[in-house]
Length: 198
Image (tube, rainbow, N blue to C red):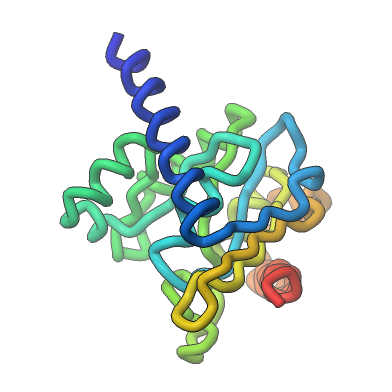
């Protein structure tokens, strides 16, 4: 019964957010045909604001579980959204094994996860190194990566465009733990994202 009501709430919240971004941000969604209808997927996008996760969640044609920092639950609204969308909370500690296990379990069940390679908002602009999280999950699970570029929705340019690229397949590297390989994959994923965000 609890799951039934949660599904109803989730559907309602998604509908409200979708209407909001369509009307207020005049959102344009491109490349939905690139998203596979079945199989495990990792959605990876550029991160500019708090608007980015809901943009991906409500515009993609697949349900997904976002990886988000645990601190967001201090805000009651974000805590509510985290419950509705079954977010995987990540602790600041790099050795947060639980979130890794939960993410891999989700992918093993042929479901989807989503995260930002930048690790934080405007990470690249701040000069921070792109994180290997997406590459790690892709190599460990064999799941395809769907790059996503978001632009607009900021001061001076309210109109938002979200563009989904063709899936990137790194299954030939499955099980590889070489840091150089992970860095190479990360660079390729981020390059695709930035190209889509132009």
